[in-house]
Figure 1 (cartoon, rainbow, N blue to C red):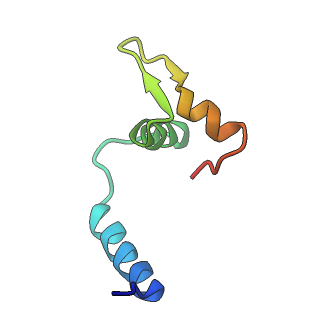
Figure 2: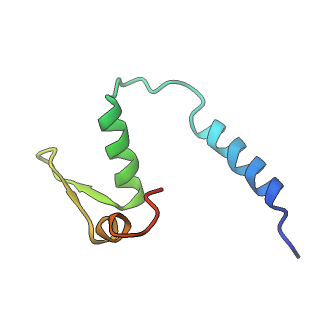
Length: 68
């Protein structure tokens, strides 16, 4: 079975909209929102002291892979 690329995009867009149905109840700065995203992607780690460090995968992305 072949997957239709236009349907893949439509499904992903629908899931994306459903994932963010309402504004977040907590105000995040633009940088904080990016850090949350990068943490979910496994590109950074956040310690209990709210310090960030790049992971090995994050380094690989910076050195030549796609950042998103």
